[in-house]
Length: 276
Image (tube, rainbow, N blue to C red; front, side):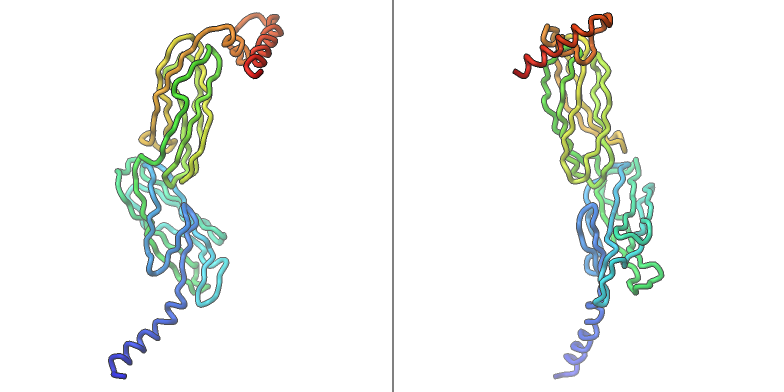
């Protein structure tokens, strides 16, 4: 064996302890991923301006053939884009989360965030692992589906709109559902569609006066008015005896209290007629 081959072989053997002793970081939120010396960056996904995400790692790791249930003590955010806000994790928990909030005026684009998994005091000889988490800032972080979009009902009678929010981003920031420009008070509902999930919500609509109305149902992120979608909805309200009976149960008519027993009977008759 010549001298060059012998030196190369010895060098490779010297590296074996370092490969064996290599440790890692297991990301568990917003999805599962493993970070090690050969994988120093991870793409997290989409997030809107002003929204907040949590990067969570497991404290457990392995080093020098020793398993640690509590190896990483802290997840720290060491570098952020300008105007962003971060909060390092709490200490000594089995799952460690760092909180990151995007600047409300952040322009669309790809941004790196530098994080450090730290073994405080290096008591377990783990040191720290630095890695980059990359996010794509865009207001297009959810998909919206609404049905029905053509509704026929009676004055004062509730009509349900079914709203599906498919959150394709990495933030769990709440959304608001609202409807404008109707001759009745309609509430704003605040809901949460968790990241990478699709969830259904029921939004009741009331119209007090007969007529044909064209409006829009809005879904927007609480974090930023830039994150919103809307769907046109047509509502027709027609006064009729069955519709008036149905509205009685909602307290729409205002008459003397002595008539209330009769109204209750009318409402019950209407319910029976609709379900028999």
